[in-house]
Image (cartoon, rainbow, N blue to C red; front, side):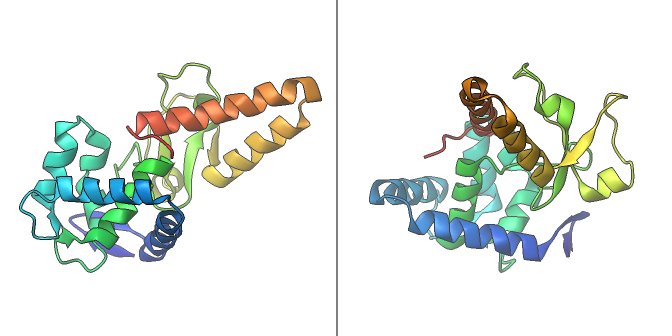
Amino acid sequence: MATEAGQSYPLINMEEIRRAATAYYENLPEEKKRYARFIFSDMDKNGDGQINLKEFMEYHNKDNNSALTHPSLFRALDKNSNGSLDFEEAMVLYYITQSGRALFCKSCNTFLTDVYFSCSQCFTSNDSTISTYEICCDCYGGKKFTHHEDAIFCDNYSLLSRSRSLALAAPAEKRRGVLGKIQTIVGVAGFVTGCVIM
């Protein structure tokens, strides 16, 4: 684990995200690749081929996308720790935003790179204004969070697996509706992070 300014992020998990981002980018249509390059150029205000923290913050602040202005995300993206992002590092940001992975612990505000816990009641709520309340393993294990008293937490992989199992267990006539609701939940997660899945 690497630590900077009191925030930590697992390097191995960021490497997995980087691998997924590379695979995602390689399979994008050329139009979407050009768009990713456009976004990079738009962030790189001084045109030096690097995005520094100031450029990163200004770009995301102009769109009121506060989820992406967290310094722990910038540090996690900065693979070589040189204080700036080249296109390859910024491509990971593009993947994170497009996939809805821009999630931060509701307790310590650390960027979530791997397994985390969500409140299952909030996750399955019909109210789209309710947060799914994601917390990192350290905060969950150390009981360093405050949430409603009857909260039942599941890790993200279990929650996804259970959601699919419930959908498949539904009677055939209801299955499509249940799968549609899961798709809506996934869509809301993308909307909350200010992105559109391509």
